[in-house]
Image (cartoon, rainbow, N blue to C red; front, side):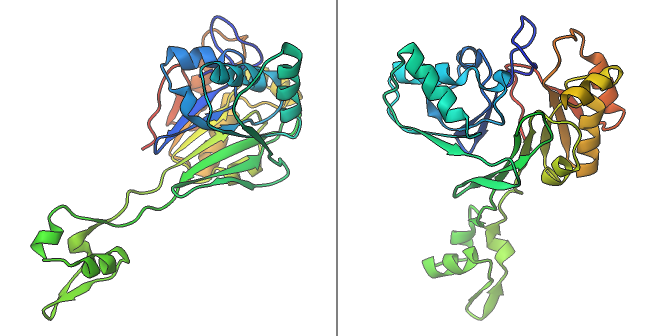
Amino acid sequence: MGCGAAAPTPYFLTTSQLVNIHGQLILIDCGEGTQLTLRQTKAKFQKINIILISHMHADHTMGLPGLIATMSLLGRRTSLNIWGPKELEEFVRRTWYLTGTHVDFEVKFHVNSSIGPNVVVDSESFMITSFPTKHRVPTCGFVIEEKEGVLSLKGHARKDYNLSHLDIQILKRGEDIVKKGEVIPNMFCMEKPPKCRKYAFAADTAFSPKVVEAVKGCNLLYHEATFETKDLDIAKKTLHSTSSDAARVAKDAGVNQLLIGHFSNRYRDLSQLFLEATEVFTNTSIAKENKTYLIE
């Protein structure tokens, strides 16, 4: 929804992403203007039930009070769960109070610690874990990971092997079955579940071994890449990353693909950021607003 840093401009909006996992919509960060982008992309944002806020900086939070107010104006009645820093609830509710905003559904705020890894959501089909990053204020990144699925019956197996309900239950446990003295291997009847996918969002951060450890083995890693190498001194002062820093994390963590974003407004041409990242980690892409990325 936004891939720029610090402030919205005609070139980039501030940080926000919408993740769809098994039909569940998760919003990560909510910079100013997020609800406009959600409308432009025709995203069904009333179906967002989980919001994750990485830290309290304005370019990650300023869109949140307005987005929730709009949800209420449009008739939302289902509850909404938000995880973020301890200051987040006061910020949002105080904004509503001062602007006379009424929200007609339950908003549940959950404090997410930035001290160490923390399980945020543990659902039937996926898990969300937060991890600390290295920034000027307490900040978290997030890993969204599918849980292993179950074996499924192949299309014609029931008929081909005259399977009973009991046979199918045994097969779903991963066991072979015996029919008329003949062993029927499980693999003849059952499909293995797809390999679990794993996505990591590394929010504002300087290069950190803790981030490397947290995102190991991800299919896709989003990592901030605010500066070019020539501006390394500014990156160190503000505790942000260069694109080569982001690529080092991807390489050291053994991820499949890197997506870089959170670009400084000083750059109109992102080609140098891309070049410096790909020199370290080849399979790198530049984040683009309104674009969908499939995690294979």
